[in-house]
Structure formats: structure tokens, C-alpha cells
Length: 486
Image 1 (cartoon, rainbow, N blue to C red):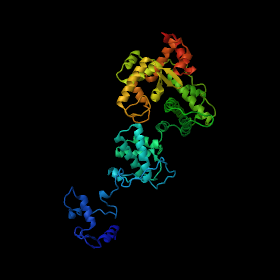
Image 2: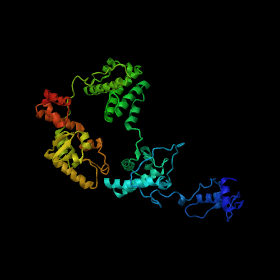
Image 3: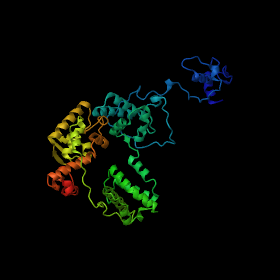
Image 4: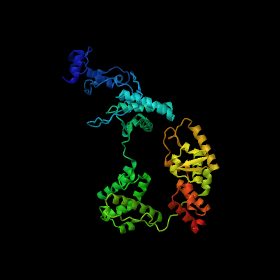
């Protein structure tokens, strides 16, 4: 007999022909086998009467024993627990081992959250639940946000292959099927020390796409340059990590030359001479300078890693014959931005127009950096101008009224970062300022005005705006030019 016959023989202890299908199987007292009854229940609509004869008109679907269960027998939802576990006083400690799986299988959650079992480690679930309550109170989350985050954490704990292990960031993608915000769950798990970010950085995926058409050796050499630029180097010569924006700008500036050299038959950057590097520089001053800086960065790192024999890009950082003049902005647009009803835009414009702050400073400026009518930034105490103080007060009043329970320490926040400890993004600052050229153009115009007012004193520019002597000289030289002076 099949497995189903054995199962139902033990239950009914009666074997005979079924009245519906005529097959000799284990039957119930009504004379109908279990297979026909299950098939009829599947084909029934709403609460109609079972049609046992019609269920077998086109054949029946076999099933294995103990695999067909009612909806009420499915594992209960993860947010309910009949045996609560008290959390120990010490925080969560993820286990160090990992249970390897034989193969990965796509999970089906068509039945909703009830398809996920309870947490495999109830003690860890209780610890994270207590930690989440404390974290939500600290950051000022609403009750619904805390409840959804708690449900998301319990879902992830129920899907773990290794109970008690730290949760990988890629595993949070399953929460989209339950309409739970991944960022809230990730923030809570990160605060508890239970999240491991195993995602491939976006700049890494972008880099792989850009160098895909280059020869294998050139691609390998550029990957060595990318690793040093992205992660830095602890061995001599030591280097600090560079920003993703710098990596993108440098790679885009040199890719046309790399592809041209590959078309000429060069399979490695070791074959590139200084003449070829000079010929690859664009004629435009701005692009020429950027490309020269990028070339020098690439070949310096490859030379330090002994991947090229000579450095053909020495002294190319200042390859442009004429220095670029500092950018300027329309003063009418600046006055309109200062008088804008948007308090965030007015405050950002005032900070840049009066004190020359960078975009990085605006994003990471904290509430404790503004006190005693001064702005404490990078070891400098900057006296705040009266128009800046007025606009900052208006923005802070709006911030308190709009997000009264927010604990974000940054001065500038929006609806996404109000209940997280994250700074605003570069795009938000650019769109809020809404000026041609962005923060850098307004800052350059402010420094240029100060250089003109102080008779090109570079030391004054260094003290006021935190510039180096080299960058301060760029503004003083621009003032001495007749075109800029007029």
C-alpha cells in the first residue's frame, strides 16, 4: 500500500471499495476514502455541499500522509507567544558558529505572516524585544513603528538557519513581502549589535560595470587601485580611504583614455608611456585638470604596489595651463533664497552665504555645535551673524513643532531621518538650497568676496574658512586678475 493507505488504515482500520471512486482504499464509516473527501473539499466553493462524485470526474490528486493540514494547524503568528520568556539583564550576544545549509530554496509566503514559525531562539527573541522597547523610546518612535519593527525582527528570527546567530543585511529583503520597512529593522538590529552588513557596496557594483569591457590585465590593475581608494591601505605607503564621489569622478575621467589604449592593443597599463598620458589629457581646462589628477592617482598606487615599472603620470595634478576661476552665483537668487518661506532653505543659504560652510558640514552639523552664539566647527569657533541666528531659530522652531519627539542630534533633518540618527543626504541639501552650482558655488562666491574685501590676504581666508594655503592662493590669484576684479 501507499503511505496514505497505511496512515488511514491505522486510523479507520477498514479497507474496502470507495463509494465515490471505487478504489480499494482505507475508508471511513461513510464508505468514502479520504482521498475523495480531500479532493471534493478542494473543489468546493464557499460552503456548498461536498460533491464526491464530481470531484473524481477528471481524476484525483494524490498527496503524502501528514502533508495536508487545516489552516488552523499552521504555526501560529510570530507576534504571539503562549510561553513568554523573561529576558536576562545582559545584552544580546550572537553565536559565533554558522550552520551550513545543503541548498537554498525559495520560500513561499503566500499565506502571509502565519507561514513563518516562532523564533528558533526564544531567549534571544526576548532580549531583542526588550532592547527594541528601549531603543524605540530613545529615538522617539511611534507605537505602530515599534510594533512593525518588532514583528519584522521576530519574522527574521523564525527564518534563521542558525538560531542565535547575527542576522545578515541581505536577509532583510524578505521583509518586503510582509510590507515591513527594512531600514527600521536594520537600525534596531544595528543598535543591538545583531546585524552583519554583507551587501556588496553600490560603488563596487558600479565599478564592475564600468570596467567590464577593458582587457583582463587592465581590469585587474584598476581593481587594485579601487581597493586602495575605497578601503585605504595600512601598509606603507599608507593611504586614507577616499570618498565614493572621488572614485567615481576619477574613474569616469580616465575611462576614455583606458578604452582608447585598449583599442590600440595595449593589454596592461605597464605599456603606457608618458607621451601617451599627455596625449590622452582633454584640451578643456576643467577636464584636463581632473583627468591629470586621476591619472596621477592611478599610477601612483600601481607604482607603490609594484604593478607598473615607472610612473608616467608624475606632476600631472596641475596639468592645466590656466587655473580655473572660482565659481560665482546670481546674487538675486541668493537674496530670494534667504527670504524663502522654507525655513530649512533659508537657514542653509545663510550658513553658506555668511560663513562658507561645505555640504559635508551642513549634513553633519549637530545641535551641540551651536551654542553661545558661536558655531564650533573643526576646532574653530565661528561667531554667528545675526541674520544667520534668526534663520536658524526659525528652522529649529519648525523642527521642534514638526517632529517634537525626534532625538536625531543633527540640525537638519527631514521626514525620513527624523526618527533615525542619520544625517540628511547630499541630494536633499542640493534640492533644498535650489541654487545653480549648489553649495560649492555659493561657498566659492563667499570666499571670493572675502578675498576682495581683505585685499587678497590668504591667512585671513585660512582662518575664516578652514582653507589650506594652496586653496587660499587660488582665490587671491583670481582677485588679482583684472577680469575678476572688475
